[in-house]
Length: 595
Image (cartoon, rainbow, N blue to C red; front, side, top):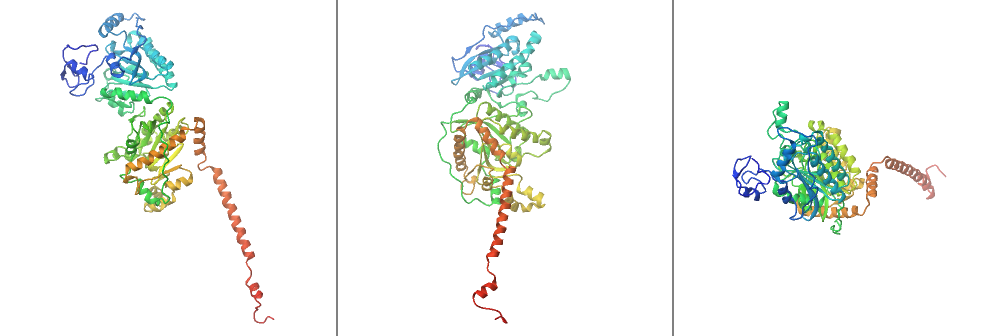
């Protein structure tokens, strides 16, 4: 059985529901009710969870006097009023949720924590009112909200009044969200029904404890009503994590530090004071040949997005899932800090080992990868966090499943969203930038490119096979595609070239990262001085003018005018050149038979 809420030391040992090993209650309590034998997360009371998250002595409960009544005069095997009385006596609480203000590592926040021992943590009118008021209280004080849900769902004893709390709590959370305030939702075991299907699933970041059962309808109910046998683990937090519904699976001992980081860094506005004034070094004046750049960009030891994240950001919290279908390791994304500034980091990850490359298809992302990036770009926009993207992909994954799940739509949505993000966007092409899969992370205010990276509409091999029907001509085609950093800077596609260590970035990951850091810091300083309306206008104009018809028309007119001038020049030269006979006469000579 799980640990009953409010159990005190001196009670009999508690058996772990997973491994059946018995542990003395004080041992479990000291271990945050995590089984020392198998790691299973047992139940905790609301007050224990508050003590886990809040700084000591800082929690101040609100709405403590709010208690449930019996609006329907409901009776099942017992009167509803009797059930409420027994729950209060057993837990020492007045309702299934405890709400209040606290500090988490010094940062103020509103906590809303459920207790499953109070009528299964079900949500009736008072629970819904307390949750709704928690969001309103936080909105008035411009505070983040952290909730911990453990609930069986709606409270049936209150009928439709209970169901309506789903709408109430979701509406209150929506107002809090529109105000640009953070909401961290923690899902504990179990979280079902009306709680899972309302505010608890609306967090900016959703965290689940390992092994938690989460869903709308529990597996036992599904089997009883539909006669459908479910696979093991169908409702586990791990299954939802794989399905892209959860950002983080966190063991209980790591909850506090992670929640504190999120509460601290998910806030509107960022400081630029930490950005060091350090002029970036220009790239070498003599770039390598196009085909050599292709080989260097694809080098197996070239730094990946993960390599740059490890070297550039002092703290990185990876976030997962598109909230629709799944997660995709071909795109890594999360919160990081560079030079004291919080940013959203998103990048293609081709993998460093053969196993990683196979799992992420060498950086060829699926629709869920791009939708994850879109979700986190929108999160960055909410909190006005700069977005930094790393581009390193042969292209979006072209398989059947990718098409079936809407890869074209996913790419299009990214392009649309990036054009209008109300926050600075900086893209860095670190390896191979292949076609639309690369551009879907590349609509940026500043596009930086390592000097040996490439960026192309198609791979040289693909172009050679299509246009020449001969892949062996790839080296020749590479030059024609104008895919090097120097070529693309001349075309106005990229803004800055980042120099690499001698021989390429693969020879010295640390040196390569230091150059990227200098250029990123310079771009962040530059973007930080531009007001949002102007930033958006400049970004639109930047991409609006690339390949603009008017530009081509002026070029055609210029070329035609030049041809006319060249023709006139040739005519004038012919007329001005003296004839040979005139030159002879001028010298006093003549031909035979002439006087």
